[in-house]
Length: 152
Image (cartoon, rainbow, N blue to C red; front, side, top):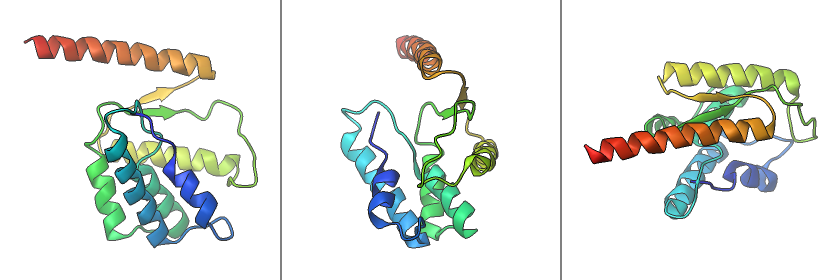
């Protein structure tokens, strides 16, 4: 399923000095989940989820609210496939970002968190076209597998 990135929309409207509070990060996770539930029948993929929002909370505040932590735990089993974009494409250094060094640190933290939660993922590398091709191949294999399982 695909949903517009709720966290970005929320951040653009509510950030103060490029930061959000712990409660606001929890609101992002709740809002994203509500949007997923509404769009599950017509959408095709998810941009970010409660785990990513949880990681932002830990990164910027050193902690997360109990509810955001709970949503991140629930998200660990919510998706059939997880794709993570590698950091091998040029960094878009805009005013609303924390810098390429922070991107590299955050990427390592995200991958470590996925490993800790035992969430398998596919790391996408290369150009946007190469990444799209990788996703298409994985989805094709996944659909074949699901068809085989359903046929048993």
